[in-house]
Length: 341
Image (cartoon, rainbow, N blue to C red; front, side):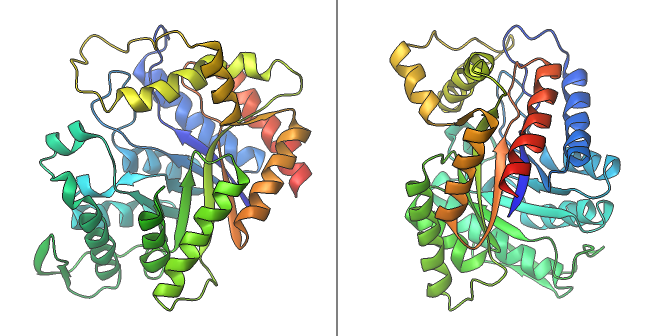
């Protein structure tokens, strides 16, 4: 079992006095701290045109992580594949893999926000086809053979150089939540990432769908990775929820807000005040509690997933003071990872 720290997004929470420069400096510092504390991986996430400056460009930040670390795996959870030109993505990912000496995982997703597809002139109805085309193109590019593309994007037989550090290129993981998208991960990817799944029963179902995809393609489960990227917060006493509550509410609202077309000039808007019932529901959707309680929850998730499992603890919280954020990273490493292992 492996443990990751995620999902660094460098968002500017409403009222946060930190500049974008400071937020990015601290994002890199957290990647360094994750390595120092013994995490196996560190992860970033992508969105575009958000008023809180949600990280839009993943691979430059991954390159910065690569330059400042030596051991930890660096991953994307996820690159929104339909919004990227596949050969250029193959080139950029190869360079990150070289800079990291082969410590890169390229996680892909198909996206869901209408304004992102409109701005990048991509028909959202083709997003699943473009995702599959991207995977095919990446495989071609990293094989050293001619790249001809797929059904959606065709190339005149080009060669991608330099080649990645890892033979055959970085592992490709696919994130998704529907049965169709999860089975796709089993058919064509090297791993599946469940997103925002704290319920072991739901995770078990999703991993079963990925195994169905493996079987559909006649593929062995050997070497295939199962992962969950889930909001997480472990704290030594009962104050944990009070420390993370506002950030949990903001992030839950922001993912819905991003799908609403509106004028986003002028900086981030605060989320509407939560209801008590809404907060209770949110609390059930994250892995939260004392280190002992969180460790037991993580064990249940690992048992539910089975196979080669990676727990990506989404311990990065917009608006959280850096000293508290750093302490939460340390607590999880020392008191949760230690207990589980």
